[in-house]
Image (cartoon, rainbow, N blue to C red; front, side):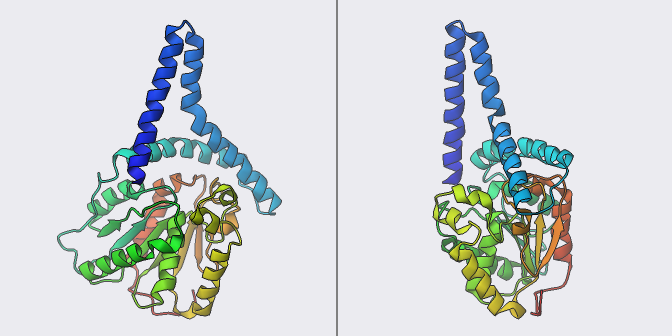
Length: 309
């Protein structure tokens, strides 16, 4: 569904652009045709620049330290390159290009569950699936649909995926979520109530305490990701009630993230946190340090036995 919508959006957008540029050229307005083409090419960069400025303004108002301008610009440029690769190519046209990874020697090897974020699909993990295949790491990447619905509606699909990894490997899986995907994993933890062992959670750019940009979203899941939402408060209260039984959580975040901000909202209270400098929101998944953190977690002990995190 997500791939189909994004595929039609890309194709219709290209058709409209070509028709507009061609029409202006044929009617003797080559300068306007060139301007329209340039505008189409830089529009996403302009929007990412606006969100970067908003991030810095909100961070400053919240009293949080700002990353140096140089780092913000580098993160903006990295995001300008990453976003088209993901939203205009991988997700619309390559959602099934990388199958899940099941090595021949899968029993006894801990696996990883990869959960995408808002308006994304499993293709956001294509480079990760390729790397997992090279390293012999069992990996399962989901596409959770329909988009925009109440986050708890995705819990059954997550539960089935965790069970699949557990049964096929015989090992507690590591759960990795990007952006909203980290909240979905926490929703699964709440519903599972400790019945299914897991190695822990790694969240990447996840709005654990919400994000300022969600104020502009109208879908049920966007409203749930607003800072201080009823859903986030209830989730935190449930976790506090059984804190000693939760698996370890590692929050990976970027001080330059222009989607999840202020920065403190991207850290799960009580868990470990690791900042990744000069990275944008989508670009976080392209950072070697992020994949390496997940690989190291896989090599650590088995399922969490409880205790404070």
